[in-house]
Length: 361
Image (cartoon, rainbow, N blue to C red; front, side, top):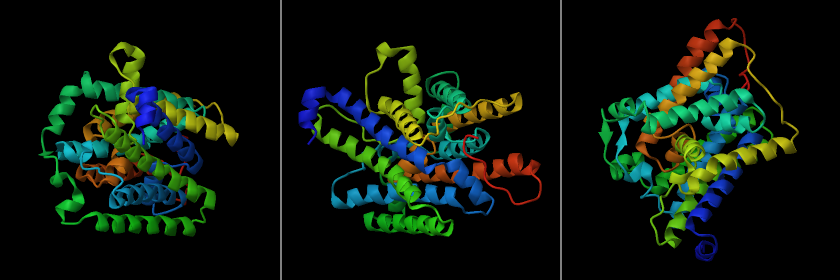
């Protein structure tokens, strides 16, 4: 199916365009749905269970059901995905997930949310996102890489069936689909209870569908290409670090799927905000707020590289193929977010019912 396009554009350029389109799809609908793991975790930890939690659950469930549905139909094989085929780190997943969860509360948004908000004119999110990318690159190949390597080496798990959390329990694709359906029903339940508008429900489902589209595109490209193509979908820690290196040292990097994700999300979010007349320049109100955002960005950058992914890369993309470490990361993110919200934000709040602050606000 992709062979004529490969002949026309070349594999690298087509891969980059695929990342751009998938990223654009995610950016547009993430902006419209207000998809944000931080806001969902805050609602959950405060026992509110409102619209932000509903949006996250719907996005998460759409990615799970869509990905496993394609596997069941024989249109997708995720066995060679990095999250399943390669050696993983349990210690990195646990510590990295908690660190990322703490960081996204401090920065008022995960990596993907910061990118979406940056495209809308939020300078706080833009600066935090840049520091996230710098920290991710430093953790991958720079000053922080020895610390990352030491932590990840503490507890390793081999690639293959031992990294598939459902296979560990003897379950297969039918059980994965049923499990995803439970999450979908939970999302719809919260959506109806919080009277979430239909347009937001559809936008949340479309946000999750972008993850499915990423898996399908890279798989189809791998089947049509003569050269090895890595099976992957949306993530933001690695692509952010790669894009940073492209800007600083472009001669050493080739175009690819990852390099299309960040500009695609930015463009998609910008178009969505422009269409809704939501473009607005925002900055820091004081020095204390700036320190909080920057500390959060550093924690997320290092935590994501420890964990092998961010709130989307591990928490949705990795979870959609039922990678053991991805589910551990996701649990760590919810734990870290809940504890940080309790100790940092709620500790200084008056004892009264409050609403969750807008992500990036």
